[in-house]
Length: 418
Image (cartoon, rainbow, N blue to C red; front, side, top):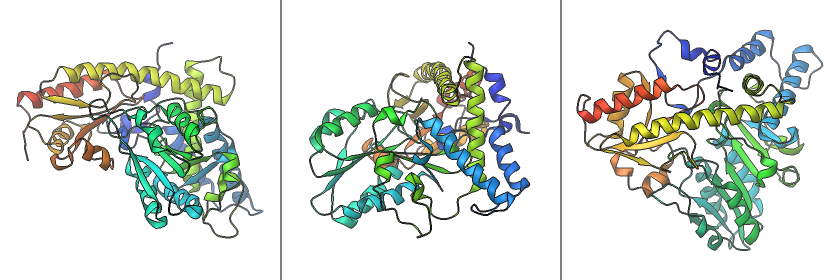
């Protein structure tokens, strides 16, 4: 069926704010929040909040909310509720996991990170490697197409490799990494764990951690239409063996051992509202789906198809602009709808500022993908301009972006080289 874009946009209050001239191409850094998430957070806070574990009503209600939120995210990821932990954000969770996993690592051991990843999936592993005297091995990517050099991965693995950290998708270039191939390579050469940064992939593709075969995956609800929070999935049998750093009374069930301290219950409520929104969307695009997991899969597939069409429109427009160089995969194959480019004669910050002056929200810089920008030789030139689509974007907005860039190319926008 036709993607219900009007019904989708009606569920995002920010798209209908007083400043209706805004076009949100900043989704890779954080999406707008859907109305069900906002309503769920408001309902929790206005109805009465409390910590869990008490006999009184608000405590019992909050406990049920937390249980429901874990179950909802488990359905989104194809996991079990006890394999899910909530935290402040993906970065904080990853540092906590790295600290816990590395208790038994030491000199002679090694781990593998990539030059394509956000630093949240690099810096924590560099830190524990330095602490434990471990070697760090780098998996490179091809600067011409933004794809990881998976042919090099087997040569980086051996019996002393403890972990391989890889992203589901590049937050800078949009590359959708071949995670099954990464997992297969690791399993064939070592007993290393596979840690996946799913922050950029979970909002755009169907995620099935059970089928993926990795060991841990982290993502961020604020990148898929919800509140600021972090989510960690840990394979059940692995979670049981991890001695997490936590206060002594904190729970030890599954991944919950990483939930030390009181969480943001309003964020859990908002995450539950976000999954409810995607559940609704799945029912719209596939009325035959008879479970929440089935509806969530239907929603993500419909979003991916819609975003692919918009992405092809954007790629065609970018290709027609003289002086514009696209980085990353040249087509929508093997990419999420995140696009990075430079414009000859224009500093990336100047391009983003000119777009902002036209009400078009875009990013410039390194986006914390510092290794990727350095590998591309752009760290001294200001990095890249980055625009991102999601399922509430429209073809008219894409055309508006292309026209704004065309004006800059033609010289009607302020130029700045530095």
